[in-house]
Image: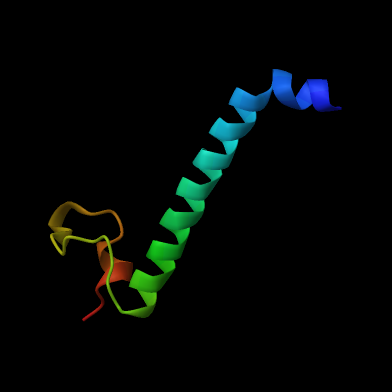
Length: 56
């Protein structure tokens, strides 16, 4: 078991770093959504979701 861990240490570390990055992104998106922020630039003239995003 220990030899397997040492042989794959680089891969394990990369997976852990990538997982932390993805979790951080998800947490930030959820916080922004709760604050009412969005990634939308409000230039909806050519957006496919213009009817659902900013309803008047």
